[in-house]
Length: 338
Image 1: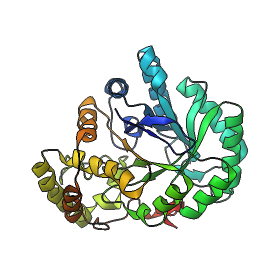
Image 2 (image 1 turned 90 degrees about the horizontal axis):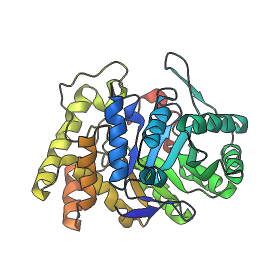
Image 3 (image 1 turned 45 degrees about the vertical axis):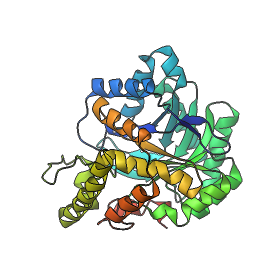
Image 4 (image 1 turned 180 degrees about the vertical axis):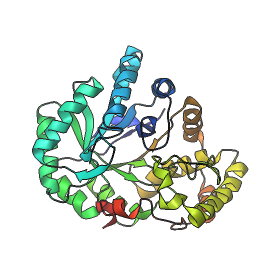
């Protein structure tokens, strides 16, 4: 698999990363055995970047990733690079209680993550959302201290806007910004991508299939469990869902003409945006099974010419999606939207 460098100071990683959250939380039930097998298959295919968070099912996802690494062949285990988010506060019922970016909390979160993952360092460490009560300089400064001590290798950011990116980068070297970016979530193109390009910061793009919405596999009549994020996501509700799936059908026609699946077309589109915006963009694919992983990996073999990109963007124009990408209460926590 091709590789990319995460910014001017970050590590060399695979062109696609594996987002592991769905193996533990927020998208319905998952099979632990299949999840571990999927991580192993990803490593075997040359995927090196594994993304997780300490609050995904309250530590469950980190332990699952740790298990997958322990049981992987040594050569594959050694190639894995771990990107970890921290800071989100949960209670025993799974409710969200804000974010904590205090320096003491940063170091506390890291200590627990190292133990659950079973590693001696985290490759890229980032707060999931900015703590509004703590200056980003203090949070990033605490991660920088962890870098100095060898517990963390690189500093990342997540869902922050251009001004916050600049403040963070003035505090310590930043490898990458993790942010949602897809055919139906293109707000980063206005100010955020130009800022990352200027500062030599890469982008790790999550939500490239918009939580399955533009995967080509989501059915209008699908029943979602109450704890499934999509049961509360504006884009999956009522008329919004119908409108958005109509966009998917338009994309399907383009994909079929190209001889690829809808998911492969959508992922390949994100892969193509790095050169178009003169920056490094690494899509994170949220595959929970080996079947979906294999489909997603096929996107790396897809070449999109300018005519293909034009056809895709005519099928799914910028800002064409109906509904915000998060419920209103969660949108308020996105520094990237302010």
